Every structure is written in structure tokens, then in C-alpha cells.
Image (cartoon, rainbow, N blue to C red; front, side, top):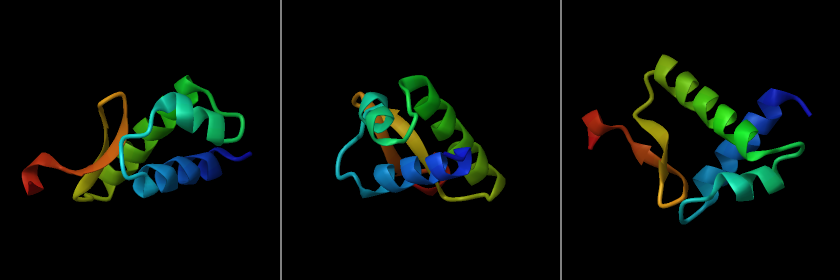
Length: 74
């Protein structure tokens, strides 16, 4: 599976989850996924959000990942 597609799956799952979703859980859902890969993909997503000057980011909290508003917009 292409890395871009894996990134999109992680993004969709984090957005859809009502509570923080763990790297282990994401790794089980993303094809060919591992905890390490998920962390890399989250880093890439956040890098892309920064380049696009988005008002949000993916943050690790309570043992999982969640979307949050960047500090300057809270």
C-alpha cells in the first residue's frame, strides 16, 4: 500500500475517533502498519499541517492520538 494512502487512513481514523486512539490500534488497522510506522505517519501529517499553516495538529495524549487546535488558536 502506498504511504500516502496509509497517511490518509491514519488521518481519517484520528479525526473520526471520539477519544484518543493508540498507535497500537492504528497499527492493527492500517495495512502493513506498526506502532513505529504510525508514529512516522503522524509526524508527516503534522509536518504537512505546519506547511499548510493549519489551525490544528495531531497530538499524543492519554495513550493515543487526537486532533487538537494549535496553541495559538485556543
